[in-house]
Image (cartoon, rainbow, N blue to C red; front, side, top):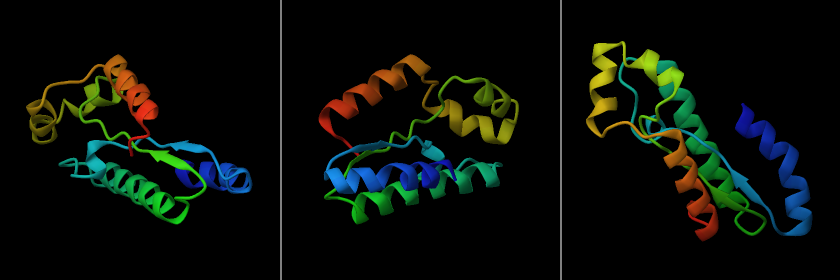
Length: 114
């Protein structure tokens, strides 16, 4: 719900100004799925859906960005790697370092990439 709450708090002023920027972060699980992690996958699909809906509905009032990285080296990912079924797809593309995700986000912000 954090994405919804943030939009509710920020969009009224953005609409009034006719300008603003919303940056939501989901996961590649929002575009694909995370095997053996139903609740995680569902929440990430929801985050992607909210971002897409906001992008369409408020296209004139705010710019949007939605990074969906896969396999970022975090403590939560380390736990997911303990599951042999879920770990294989995560490791297929290699692990991404948090700093690399941050750099990609900054680049995306500079080019206004969704």
